[in-house]
Length: 256
Image (cartoon, rainbow, N blue to C red; front, top):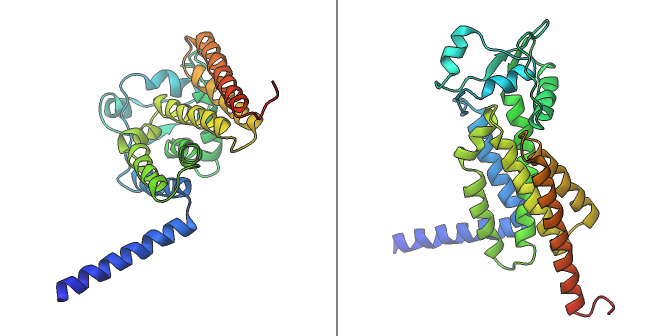
């Protein structure tokens, strides 16, 4: 009898928690908060989790005014995650001719970093910028998927979103100079904007601007295949607008 009473109490508490979440949080907000908690622990609470240099970092941090000394280079090259990178105080003789949309985020992170540190770049400032954009992308994507769902089905989708986008294997890229972190964010925003355009959730022009902005980020993250990526984005977006118009026409909402 005692065990049965305990089970009933646990069930009642659980249901009250579920109803509280359903009353005060949308599935999109629930997913965003879940990813927020995981991301803070992974990226900003010791021991910090990030990725080591496999040889690709040099052209990125060198083109943005940073370097590594010989001891640090030995530690980072195929070694382990290092979060601090010295900043050039004078002429950068190792400057490489490398342009990427990733540099926009790195320069923004450097600007923010300089308010707190002098001569050292803490890569967690870059992770912070990436993470803020990730939270917005998760919110919009989950909202686009669950906007017409009823009951608890939307929260099931939100839970899966937490498990997928809160995965350390993805978030760890933010604490590195790899471009995959930006690619993940761009992919989520592109998908979310198309879903929200189709769902008529927000202004189509704002969503279209969001789509092309992150498509441009995605295309210019690498120096190759930019034209092909932009062309495919135009065709894909046009197809979604065409599909939306056909849907409205089928329901008699557009004139013949």
